[in-house]
Length: 395
Image (cartoon, rainbow, N blue to C red; front, side, top):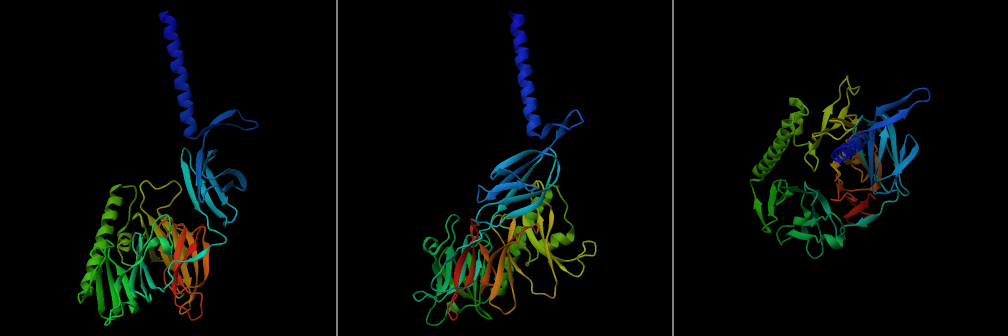
């Protein structure tokens, strides 16, 4: 009896171990493959995890329909493939990807609607919109008939429209100062204050927590203090990233990361910078727009340093802001002194540039909503009408 029990126990343990080993090898990417004239061979494969926003899109691998998003494609021999994701009513998404042994290449395609909706975000006038660093609020000037002045609109993740966002005036016109005719608005690093420029040397500091405002003469000190805080925050992010020792960053690149004109992604793990092209890259004499990715670990298939696009320094330069997913940029290409432009969404590796809007536009920046379902821009649909903020749907 004891021998039979021991034998059954050993057989059960062997079966469990064998099944566990086979499951591990399968999930690690190993597959049995047989050529026509060769014996069965165990080969290591990779996997693609294909997602899309919105979901339920068709996934093609080298022009062959293989699955629908959001799903995984297992057992793929290592190598380069063309991945295409399509959905009715949306512009097709296509990218060359590489599959690696025993690894999962994770792809999320942001699909752009072929018939985007344009909806008003304000209806009493808006000018010089400025988005907070976290994409959580929008400040702008407005000649609202009842309360003209400086307005702030909180932006929610799920909804973005005039009726749900509850904008409020934070600096109302007085008999002595028309704040609604200001020149510029600047957000503090903590997003708790605004520095509003009225004239060349006239500034007001607005405290959004206490709902107070005061005229300031030390505006240059305030700007320097805010700039120093931004540099300090960026240094901390750089130091944390470099501690991982997953990558190296030369001094020139570290200096570029801390420059005021460098734009950081909302996740503080990527930054967009501009540098001069080199003969080695075949871009000598051009400007390179690049994105450095400090994620640790770096997602499979992604690069540390990405060339987004190049431009001629003599040409008008596009304006770029970050899209909410941290892997795309919103590009505004606008002719000088012309109130028209093209707004596009482009991935940080320079692929899948998709046009969102091509019409009249009065702002020098276009902003992403927190949820990424819309972008916000300033335009007018009347020849002599006032400008207002509008949303253009991405999906």
